[in-house]
Image: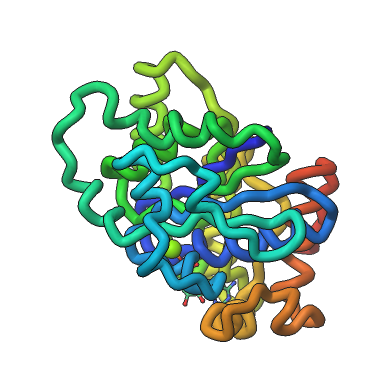
Length: 254
Ligand SMILES: Nc1ncnc2c1ncn2[C@@H]1O[C@H](COP(=O)(O)OP(=O)(O)O)[C@@H](O)[C@H]1O
Ligand SMILES: [Mg+2]
């Protein structure tokens, strides 16, 4: 089972958009996929049209040992979501539990055995919940928005990951995904050039273009494929799914 944490301590870079649409693309190609909403803001949960007032979510599974099957909701054939749960916010400040508190998600995730891919939508912080996501995953997908020259933030994230992984004794595969790509914008070109200069080994070829349908679809409770599958957004997330699963990479003219 591939367990992929969609992670970046910066907000607004496309973590939730990527988790939502990549999960649908994977399910469409016949994979069994489960997404976990690890952001207390619950935006992923909302884009799946789930009311979490009656579902303890991943917070319940981590804090009160609620079995994962009791909180998992099937959205369609092959696609499940574990909602955030209202208590997830409390956990960011949790200090009890000593050395085990980073492993709570890992313990829960070990109950899931029959899926092909698990996607974890992380909060925009490197705190407790991000740590749990990192410990539980075996790959890290880092969306980077090309409408902002945030190289410093990406370098910092890599430094944090390296530091923690050294302590864990792991070396998880890391992928960088360029989002909000706009070929005509100079800033986009600068961001992509810099990323290629420093992180060429981690860069995915697929780029997610700036596309208004991607921003609109979650408020209708839909993925890009149900909302408007003829738009760039659908094409790009399909391409991401191909690259991820089949190693097939799209090429771009620069
Ligand atoms: N490729 C894109 N084109 C246009 N808007 C996008 C794109 N990706 C994300 N957005 C929008 O940008 C905002 C932040 O994206 P989101 O996925 O919520 O980021 P994060 O989860 O990293 O905070 C949202 O309003 C989202 O709809
Ligand atoms: Mg988000």
